[in-house]
Image (cartoon, rainbow, N blue to C red; front, side, top):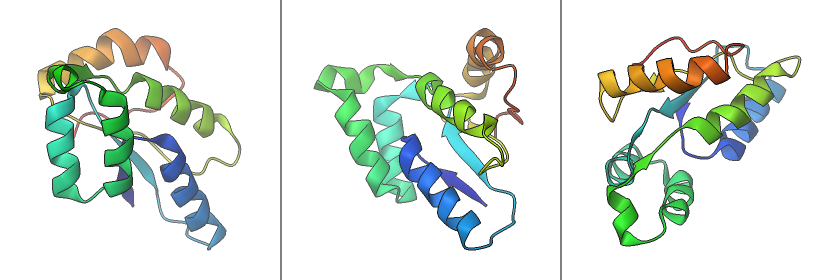
Length: 125
């Protein structure tokens, strides 16, 4: 099972509820790689992730920021802390390359791998 989101707390709660209900399926945290706020808002509306749209919009600020980029670094920080807990609520963190595959791969090389070598990042989808 996977869930696409822009805010860690609802995903962690969802995963916890599934585990408490007895789900033993593989659960992964689907994160958007680096992409513009405008692109992510469009995808969020299309995918129906309403609660996360509010989180993304609140962080976007002024209209000019709609053309800026959003990095998944802060979400990855929160999720990596949660994955270190035992038992882990979820099993991995795939990155969706909505901002482009090469851009996501470069971000992983430059940021995620250097800062989160203990987190399994299966690759860009």
